[in-house]
Length: 234
Image: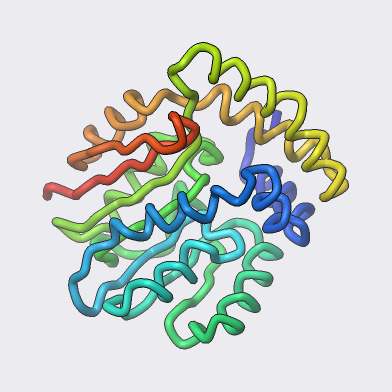
């Protein structure tokens, strides 16, 4: 089991070159619609400053700039420098280089002052935080009062039969498929372990509520993923 930030960043560095294509294949392309849905919750206020955590290769940042003309800037933060190197190239290719910056940073100690951002987004990164509660606390800290935290994360389907099929896919099929493409089966075994062991949506929402965030949840694709839409109350 990967348990510290150096191991996590090293793992994502190793699979960075094949990360996007593997995501498309193992999710059958649905991951794009999940990210689009996440971005749709970004507020429409003008001059918005957005922080995208666990930004990886920049998919959420690029989608945000493409679909939300009111965004002034996006700061993408990740531990994996190689993932962000790919993200920088994608941002330039998308013509968004003047609005997106990338910065190496730790989810548990963000390199920004209190109340720096109007909106924080994160896709599939919360479960990789060594300390989920601390990560949520940091999100709340860097948000302005009234700001939005939008988190997309895997969850376990409630339907027994679908859940069993989903877990079988994650445990046996995904590591083989991801490993064959990336050359790193261990990384996708890690993915399986984080999804299975991660807190339930109700527990995540409760953690957010304790960090002065008012939370709503949206379940997508029969419960495969959950979007947490949180507002900082004060």
